[in-house]
Image (cartoon, rainbow, N blue to C red):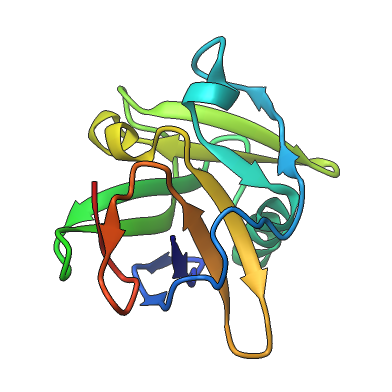
Length: 155
Protein backbone atom coordinates (compact mmCIF):
# COMPACT_ATOMS: atom_id res chain seq x y z
CA UNK A 1 0.00 0.00 0.00
CA UNK A 2 1.38 3.41 -0.93
CA UNK A 3 0.47 6.93 0.06
CA UNK A 4 0.21 9.46 -2.75
CA UNK A 5 -0.15 13.21 -2.41
CA UNK A 6 -2.25 14.91 -5.06
CA UNK A 7 -1.60 18.21 -6.69
CA UNK A 8 -4.85 19.33 -8.35
CA UNK A 9 -3.05 19.77 -11.69
CA UNK A 10 -0.80 16.69 -11.91
CA UNK A 11 1.26 14.85 -9.35
CA UNK A 12 3.19 11.63 -9.10
CA UNK A 13 4.70 12.56 -5.73
CA UNK A 14 4.62 9.70 -3.25
CA UNK A 15 5.48 9.12 0.37
CA UNK A 16 5.93 6.15 2.67
CA UNK A 17 3.36 3.36 3.00
CA UNK A 18 0.41 3.75 5.36
CA UNK A 19 0.87 2.14 8.76
CA UNK A 20 -1.59 -0.76 8.67
CA UNK A 21 -2.92 -2.56 5.58
CA UNK A 22 -6.63 -3.18 5.44
CA UNK A 23 -7.57 -0.48 7.96
CA UNK A 24 -9.56 2.21 6.21
CA UNK A 25 -10.06 5.69 7.55
CA UNK A 26 -13.69 5.85 6.44
CA UNK A 27 -16.48 3.95 4.72
CA UNK A 28 -16.28 2.96 1.07
CA UNK A 29 -18.52 4.93 -1.26
CA UNK A 30 -20.83 3.14 -3.65
CA UNK A 31 -20.49 4.13 -7.32
CA UNK A 32 -23.48 5.90 -8.84
CA UNK A 33 -22.56 4.66 -12.32
CA UNK A 34 -19.95 2.03 -13.13
CA UNK A 35 -18.70 0.33 -16.29
CA UNK A 36 -19.77 -3.15 -15.26
CA UNK A 37 -22.51 -4.80 -13.24
CA UNK A 38 -20.20 -6.00 -10.48
CA UNK A 39 -18.07 -2.85 -10.22
CA UNK A 40 -17.61 -3.07 -6.46
CA UNK A 41 -16.04 -6.53 -6.60
CA UNK A 42 -14.04 -6.12 -9.81
CA UNK A 43 -13.57 -2.37 -9.98
CA UNK A 44 -12.19 0.61 -8.16
CA UNK A 45 -13.58 1.67 -4.78
CA UNK A 46 -13.16 5.10 -3.19
CA UNK A 47 -13.67 5.89 0.49
CA UNK A 48 -15.87 8.78 1.60
CA UNK A 49 -12.82 10.56 3.02
CA UNK A 50 -11.00 10.32 -0.34
CA UNK A 51 -14.12 11.54 -2.19
CA UNK A 52 -14.30 14.57 0.08
CA UNK A 53 -10.66 15.51 -0.68
CA UNK A 54 -11.08 14.93 -4.43
CA UNK A 55 -14.27 17.06 -4.53
CA UNK A 56 -12.54 19.84 -2.56
CA UNK A 57 -9.54 19.87 -4.92
CA UNK A 58 -11.86 19.93 -7.94
CA UNK A 59 -13.75 22.93 -6.52
CA UNK A 60 -10.49 24.78 -5.81
CA UNK A 61 -9.30 24.24 -9.38
CA UNK A 62 -12.66 25.05 -10.94
CA UNK A 63 -12.95 21.56 -12.45
CA UNK A 64 -16.43 20.54 -13.52
CA UNK A 65 -17.26 16.97 -12.46
CA UNK A 66 -19.70 16.54 -15.35
CA UNK A 67 -16.94 15.94 -17.93
CA UNK A 68 -13.66 16.03 -15.99
CA UNK A 69 -12.48 13.57 -13.38
CA UNK A 70 -9.64 11.95 -11.50
CA UNK A 71 -7.37 9.72 -13.60
CA UNK A 72 -5.80 6.79 -11.78
CA UNK A 73 -3.10 4.82 -13.54
CA UNK A 74 0.08 2.82 -13.44
CA UNK A 75 3.39 3.85 -15.01
CA UNK A 76 6.56 1.85 -15.44
CA UNK A 77 9.42 2.82 -13.17
CA UNK A 78 10.55 3.00 -9.59
CA UNK A 79 12.55 0.50 -7.56
CA UNK A 80 9.96 -2.27 -7.84
CA UNK A 81 8.90 -1.71 -11.45
CA UNK A 82 5.48 0.02 -11.31
CA UNK A 83 4.39 3.37 -9.88
CA UNK A 84 0.95 4.88 -9.24
CA UNK A 85 -0.19 7.89 -11.24
CA UNK A 86 -2.93 10.26 -10.07
CA UNK A 87 -4.05 13.49 -11.73
CA UNK A 88 -7.08 15.37 -12.99
CA UNK A 89 -8.12 14.94 -16.62
CA UNK A 90 -10.58 16.99 -18.68
CA UNK A 91 -12.50 13.97 -20.02
CA UNK A 92 -12.26 10.18 -20.31
CA UNK A 93 -10.50 8.56 -23.24
CA UNK A 94 -12.34 6.26 -25.62
CA UNK A 95 -11.47 2.94 -23.90
CA UNK A 96 -11.36 4.18 -20.28
CA UNK A 97 -13.44 2.61 -17.56
CA UNK A 98 -15.38 5.36 -15.80
CA UNK A 99 -16.89 5.34 -12.32
CA UNK A 100 -19.08 8.10 -10.93
CA UNK A 101 -19.36 8.62 -7.20
CA UNK A 102 -21.58 11.09 -5.40
CA UNK A 103 -20.26 13.25 -2.57
CA UNK A 104 -22.97 15.43 -1.05
CA UNK A 105 -24.26 17.36 -4.09
CA UNK A 106 -21.20 16.80 -6.29
CA UNK A 107 -20.22 14.01 -8.64
CA UNK A 108 -16.69 12.70 -8.74
CA UNK A 109 -15.66 10.75 -11.81
CA UNK A 110 -12.73 8.31 -11.83
CA UNK A 111 -11.05 7.28 -15.10
CA UNK A 112 -8.81 4.22 -15.53
CA UNK A 113 -7.24 3.13 -18.82
CA UNK A 114 -7.45 -0.59 -19.79
CA UNK A 115 -3.78 -1.40 -19.12
CA UNK A 116 -3.80 0.22 -15.67
CA UNK A 117 -7.09 -1.49 -14.81
CA UNK A 118 -5.30 -4.86 -14.92
CA UNK A 119 -3.16 -3.74 -11.96
CA UNK A 120 -5.81 -1.64 -10.19
CA UNK A 121 -8.83 -3.95 -10.24
CA UNK A 122 -10.12 -4.45 -6.70
CA UNK A 123 -8.17 -1.43 -5.41
CA UNK A 124 -9.50 0.96 -2.76
CA UNK A 125 -8.48 4.62 -2.87
CA UNK A 126 -8.39 6.07 0.63
CA UNK A 127 -7.15 9.34 2.10
CA UNK A 128 -4.97 9.47 5.21
CA UNK A 129 -4.44 12.61 7.27
CA UNK A 130 -2.10 12.43 10.25
CA UNK A 131 0.39 14.76 11.90
CA UNK A 132 3.21 13.09 9.98
CA UNK A 133 1.69 13.00 6.50
CA UNK A 134 -1.39 13.37 4.41
CA UNK A 135 -2.19 11.83 1.06
CA UNK A 136 -4.01 9.19 -0.89
CA UNK A 137 -3.48 5.50 -0.09
CA UNK A 138 -3.71 2.91 -2.83
CA UNK A 139 -4.89 -0.23 -1.04
CA UNK A 140 -4.14 -2.63 -3.85
CA UNK A 141 -4.69 -6.40 -3.59
CA UNK A 142 -2.59 -6.85 -6.76
CA UNK A 143 0.57 -5.45 -5.15
CA UNK A 144 2.88 -8.33 -4.28
CA UNK A 145 5.68 -6.20 -2.82
CA UNK A 146 6.75 -2.58 -2.71
CA UNK A 147 10.06 -0.80 -2.34
CA UNK A 148 11.26 0.53 1.01
CA UNK A 149 10.01 4.05 0.38
CA UNK A 150 6.61 2.82 -0.84
CA UNK A 151 6.74 4.74 -4.12
CA UNK A 152 6.58 1.70 -6.39
CA UNK A 153 5.32 -1.87 -6.37
CA UNK A 154 5.48 -5.25 -8.12
CA UNK A 155 2.34 -7.02 -9.25
